[in-house]
Image (tube, rainbow, N blue to C red):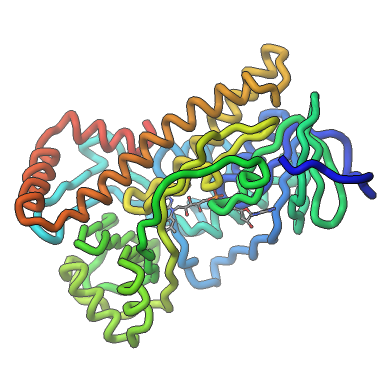
Length: 402
Ligand SMILES: Cc1cc2nc3c(=O)[nH]c(=O)nc-3n(C[C@H](O)[C@H](O)[C@H](O)COP(=O)(O)OP(=O)(O)OC[C@H]3O[C@@H](n4cnc5c(N)ncnc54)[C@H](O)[C@@H]3O)c2cc1C
């Protein structure tokens, strides 16, 4: 880590148990979960989130929350507010191959559940978590950017860009895929650039979405149509970079027409759409989730392809593991920032996230096959999987985080 140079000018508050850096969905959930578990917690965020309002257009960034994430948000007492604000529940998922027509269908009822998940706006989840931080006793520092940190024997000393300092027994880096803290700690990443962008927008379709998440795999990448609460669908269309730029530059009607073709008109014609945005896609895994009195969590630790809709679900599983690990350490009278404690969290989450991330990457590779023989083999495999009850149930259970 970068050492803190010279004498610091100001100190903020008493020593903390945990300082969480990054107040996105994962970091805000971590701060809330740790404070609720009785740890003196601060959340440091560079940019204050914009207030979420029902009157605003639906955020272009949405996520599919799996049952494990919903259970966790419920445990934090924020799910009821999120659910009553605006979410798109879905009970079915239909995935099909654009090259050979093979399909796999998941149905909540056949898994003994009411729903497979909810499509929720990132800003709604983040804003609702932020609303709960104060009452839970989280010390929120915003805007606050970490400039340097230095691990000492019993704490980590943190220096902010404005010169203020604070200390905590543990520093949690939840500062996103570009994680400045991960870089300060010298933790390398590995992975690959998909050379794809995900084009996102909300669209009105001729036919209703029937509370179903639809995903068609095309040679250039998958196209997902995710059910929104207001009857529209949110698209996540992964395309090679040049194609994404071309599609972004199309005029409104030309874009809707191309989208209709790409979706195989599964929901009929695409009648209208919001402005579009695009996000670059990469697989990025931190080589370790642990530094001196530091752990990584959320996208700071792992960025994955959105084809399985699992990025933040993995981040929220990190949060649960970290909370439970620190809880157990405290109960055993251990220092919550001690290396053996952090190793337990890091080992468990790093191996689980890596397996998932490589699984999603494997899917991206398999669906990129173009040779007719491989495309036919893939179709056979999808058909077999759709009929293989126990294996299909295992897959659905895993995606649900059960
Ligand atoms: C197109 C697309 C579709 C997706 N769909 C899904 C889906 O269906 N399901 C799903 O689970 N996931 C999905 N994801 C992934 C999901 O959006 C991310 O995993 C999630 O948003 C990451 O949350 P995070 O809190 O870890 O990081 P971020 O949201 O990146 O938050 C990091 C925070 O740290 C702050 N920060 C950064 N640096 C500093 C600093 N130095 N000091 C203080 N603060 C700092 C930032 O301001 C930011 O608020 C999708 C992603 C994309 C791109």
